[in-house]
Amino acid sequence: MGIEIKSGSLVDFFTSAKDTAKEIDEGKKITKKNTIWIEPNDLSNLLKPERTRLIRMLRRKKKIKFSDLKDEMKRTATSLNYDLKLLAKYELVRTYNEPNPGHGIHKVVEPLFGNHKIEFRAEI
Image (cartoon, rainbow, N blue to C red; front, side, top):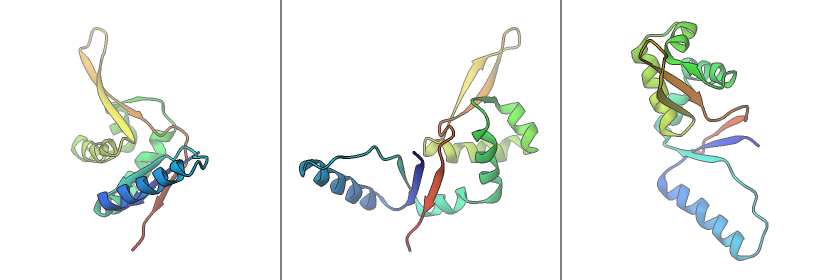
């Protein structure tokens, strides 16, 4: 099962939810949907080369320290934080602080999409 990312508004989301509710009312078998509704502007931002490269890199990891990710991607902390904030907004990643024994804490990035295929769909 993949994750489908659709461009749309809140109205589009509720229309989709109503359609699913109708299917349930009609007794149809419903399969789990991994659909994320995303604002059109954010969709175009997610498709930028550095962000898709970040998603590909995170796909290979269960979790990674922020500093290691920054070094591997050869990115500044500011630009990487911006990208992670966008991905976190749509629950594709989670960031949190974890104790680093004897050295304080470090920031950890955990992808939430696993090995699922991510499909982007946009209607104009």
